[in-house]
Image (cartoon, rainbow, N blue to C red; front, side):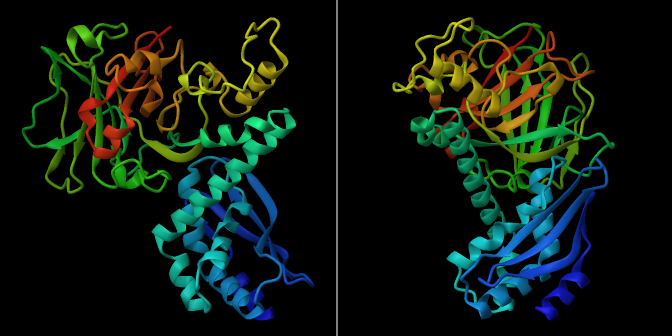
Length: 410
């Protein structure tokens, strides 16, 4: 115990980016039942956020020798564990308790020595899988708790099943980042590549996503693990699109992971362009908005009385539930750029509009690929949003030719 405390004090503080992890004295505590806890605090030097918590390092009733080896490895691996947490959370609040997620190794791993535990704690793929599993478990618990509080407990399993991981793309406030992921600016294209057009109109470059960078936040593993994803749109009409008459107004292209021969390619003369904005990705829980097809099969949920002035009791509770997890889009919360998860409708149900492109694909089988919001200097019509959807089977097959766009404006 004393040796472990000495090692912990030697390893802390640990930093990753703007986040600093420190020990709060008296440090480690070993309870009579074998439970090992440590008091930690986290500082975000950019935002000024500060959090202090007692973190359970090892639960009770563990093999003492194995638990000590685990704790020793956890301390030695703190820099890589902290990096995983911070990278997944981006600039969102980071709590010390998030560092408890490696406990899963005590249950699922055959490791017994500190060296074996360290090997697992420093494997990025293993650590990311643990973090995703912990997030999913915490999400399910959170959803169930809210359902119980609102007397929606009989629907908890169905609502948990609807949870999807979204990747929020928050514009950086401290200048440009050394990353290939960007909104606006110039796409990285092979030298001499033709600029995308829709009929005779040059399309507008909206976003470029470095898929390797996004993989740490793609808990469901539904995006390709490497390469570039590039999104273009025809914004020349200034209004919502009619894909039936003129073909898809959104184009999604992929580029290989080896882009050393690629160059930042400027748009042709006359094409609308947006300024380059760097973004910070972060994992976020999403549930479907009310105006979506995902609740149509909730036959046991009494949504018959949907009059906002006099809602039925269960419908009122359901609206309160949605306000906890997916409140209506508010101008104060914009811009809301996102990959995956669910869309934030500005007007009506965007899944219904998108599904007309392939009538044989049920609306619930269209996955949000990206949501691009308006920003100052990069307005999409009248402060609108563009949603890019793709059938889930096409996404699994990497067939981005089936992607379709929905443009909603005020």
